[in-house]
Length: 639
Image (tube, rainbow, N blue to C red; front, side, top):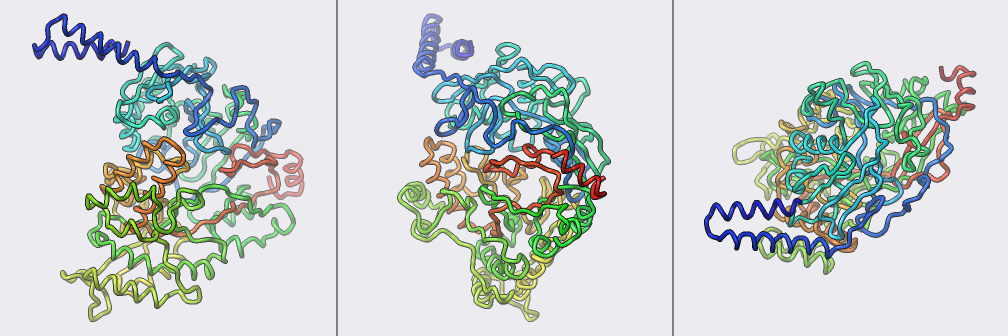
């Protein structure tokens, strides 16, 4: 019917122009409908229980449970962790307010991913999905047993409503995808919905993209006159395993398992969601949080401080065996963590300035002196994958980069130079004199000359100011020596510690009021349209994923090719080209990564023998061992 409506609209438009007879217009309409129908008939329509970007799905349609869960895991008990700062909202989909930790745990989507394969999405809310070979549309055949947490049924109307809501009121990255790439959404019956994608765009990722849509209850949202753009402590109504139990705003939040959760026996959920409650305790700083852990106020800690990990775990509950300290393999792509420049600032417009500032961060000394040798340096945004650029570009990369060089969008050197690597410094001293000389020469070339007081100034007499802002006190010991190195270079550098609310206000849109922050470069195992949310010119002033404010025409062109890649090999090549170009822009000073999770927890938990490759899984696949818990309670270790 959609094709008929298109044909009829074309007839009406031309009829108004008065340039075709009625018979000719009818013939044209029928011809257009015939061509479109023919194209649809030429393609095989696939009906499946999921979709994979490249290759086949790991799990067959009749699988019983995921390989990395214990299907017999007992239900009960509590998982408790800490979170820094505070919160004043239960809406994680608005730029207003500070959302509570795990606020999105209340919601589900049509499809869901697994933690042991890349690029696969499986039906959660749907029984099956249908799509043509070119993936230009998708139909989701919904399950009839999906319920919201209040017991009301989910229907296709809720999904259409949620799509329209995120399209019109979602944060910028949602709106840009839904407005430009989805042509229409049609409710075909109460349990069947079709998404048709905009002609001319790459369709590779689109079925999975719309399948990842967070789904709300239309009746609840409209009945309570909610607003997606507002900050609120009342959550929306979702279908998830957990519901809000209780909260003390800014101090504690507890989620409780819904005993009537619709998906308890779903193969994707068997062996997961094992805790009766998940409790998050908020602390103003890490020291207070660590003391609370030592005394048993919460029971699981993912340790991010190398100093704490190396020197702090000597307390009684650890030495007596009540607490387990473990390093669990982490198979994930590197985090892409680094210092991000705000490219909107005038002093950072010159890449030589950014390179000079990057030269003054001494990772080797930091790792040896501050991190106890626990970390390795990041060089690529896609470290630990085949998508990381290395050495000079290969033939495939050259084919992508050459036209951009010819158009003047990239320097010719990008075709022959090695991929930019993080500078190497002397690990014995915080200030590396060799890198200091290199950085001095770069600033001289960029017009920032040292004054009588040693501070670098431009031709207007302005000092080269660099303020690092951060809300984690743990970063002060890392940034303080970096600031001293920069001041030795003549940079007017300083470090400012903020509270979480101030940090959010200054680093988020619309203010972007910062010089340098610690952030994460966006990456993915199968990069697609979501890369535009982080690196495209259209998101430079409105996206929390593009805090640096990157707007580069060469990057925009490569992002289009990432979306269009048809094979895994093609995607690897074009992503290496993107990685190479992004690194050459030097708007990111790479930090560090480690290939294990460093965790400590009270010895009350069980975990699967085969852990998931791409997640720790403590919230979803671990469980409470009742005998171990009773033992620690009897000993007075835990209440």
